[in-house]
Length: 233
Image (cartoon, rainbow, N blue to C red; front, top):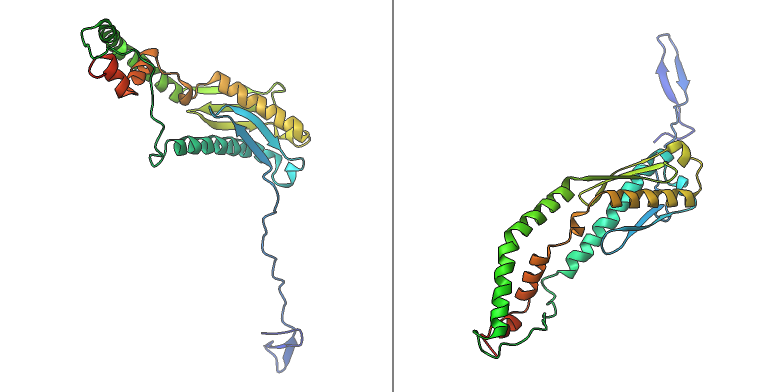
């Protein structure tokens, strides 16, 4: 490797040789990602409602104002998916759930008695409503999946769209963001997230019809169901 004392001989077409110092090219330093806290953090509750937005004081050190909307969207969706992960962990089949015990009257082994007959009559009524309520429930779930909820902050500097329980877009006025305090950014982002969620519908928050809830309750404790029908004591 040539050093600063090396010389290179070049023929210039005449009868003599010109010695030239070799060119030295500086090697650019490798790019290094800055280390520090996550500049944007969104928090949600167990029903995936946005409850808070944290913006660090010097967030512009980490990202440009024009990129703020995308970072807010990513932070919100990360919070949503983290909560989904917690919900899935709670349903881990390796963890045996506590058995359900329903407080129900006993037919004392008499299937023709009033307790058993009352449950039979209730069940027939539930099954008569089952298909209608299931169809309505399915339609609400489908509508919640395809609907888009839109909301904006009070200052109209942040606009959010949500669909299928996730944030599909966040638009931020970059001129405002270039000078806004971090607390203003957090407050307006939170307001826009919450407005969009109120306008939209998360499929996870569509309530199950009473008929389906009651049937699930009856089926959740087979022993109580058997006693109430007079099939056991």
